[in-house]
Image (cartoon, rainbow, N blue to C red):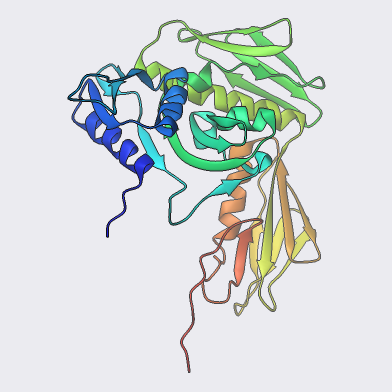
Length: 314
């Protein structure tokens, strides 16, 4: 006896129709499917849908698909919770899809809604599917909140950022963007001319500027953990000395603008105003002894999931 997942079937039909660049696709109708299509239509992922009432198509839905510059608006649509493995999440643990560039459709006690609506209404539920639209302009349009303890000045195509943790200067191409600060203290980046390539630059630039503002206001931090008997760390000046089970100690010289502390000889905290530099230092230290999958010994980032393997049985 075979079983067909109705929601998985709808998602597959939409995905296959878009691969063939069809203008519309027919799917069997149900109240649950209609509610999911309502969310997709409201968020701009499909043009429209209608319930077919003629005798040949009774009980079917016709979904009008949406395209942008000849490409499907929906870059990825994937089932999350399945009949054989249901996925539920509380309101505070509903994941963000692609850092807010996509959405998750959640079935809650208050109805079918997006992940953002579920978080704002503080309700959890079953995560039905996730949808992703690779349009970086969606991220670029978001204003950047400037904290109260941080000042941002725009001078000669440069952003001068000053905060409790330090100051930075970022160059912004004034031939592509205009920068302004709103009355409610938000930094806004606007494109002078829009196309698909510039949309990607728009979103990336906004992310870089936002990370820089966070860096000078509260800073960026990564925490590493040393696991395994004998693995130890000690800071001597600007040199990190590591005992990692080798015949000799391993040393790592810290770059400028990076602060590092060692707690209980097994916890390393790396901080700085430059997110890229903090991540680079953390990655280089981890690579000195990557975590092995059998006993989990080595250097790992706090919260990092390590896929463990079963050792040989005697």
